[in-house]
Length: 81
Image 1 (tube, rainbow, N blue to C red):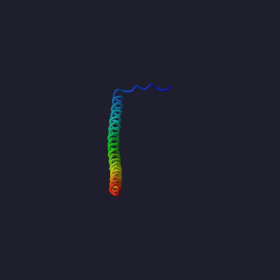
Image 2: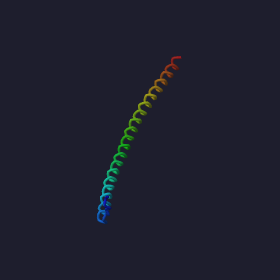
Image 3: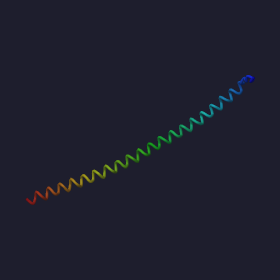
Image 4: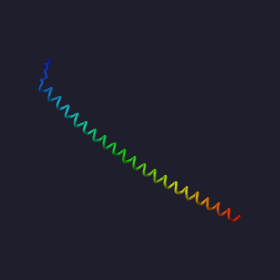
């Protein structure tokens, strides 16, 4: 038959302290990961916004050039009549 083991207050305190230290280290690491994740999301959002803005500017320039060319063609056609 096994003997019953009774934990002492000293052992319980050390166990609690080690668990607390482990949780603090883990919490700090998770906080750092969370901040890194947020920075990554902010950076990628900024890059995507910049690319979308560049694409939009390019498309607007093409549209304006096309409208100007069509306007010039209409004006030339009207003066030849």
